[in-house]
Length: 140
Image 1 (cartoon, rainbow, N blue to C red):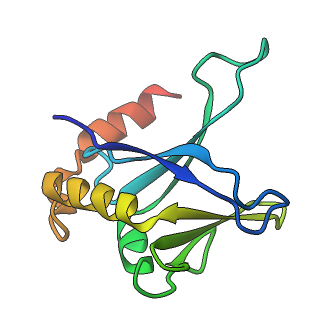
Image 2: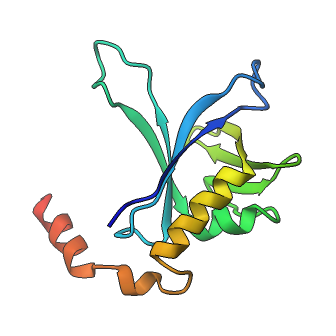
């Protein structure tokens, strides 16, 4: 099964360089049917693997709802931004936060692809609880 991966330019409107985009990816894995992943590549250096990245996992439904109206109250909040943009606020454990602006069309395309694979309301049918338990128990 092909997993949707949507590269997209994002900006950080509250940063000193609000118009400088970086490429992030929205990803969906049907084995984690409730989640969306927002991945950021890290700058390669001698101390990191070539494909090092930071991934934030949050509710796919949160992303969908937040496109139209502010949603979320935890580490991730989503809201409509300026015309054609979706704002995603990522809150760190130290109280810091980053607000990023993503193109609404890219977010909508990602959600459409993910809902084709796992329709809203059908997520529980795609959970393999036995596999998750086996993986967790094997890590001991």
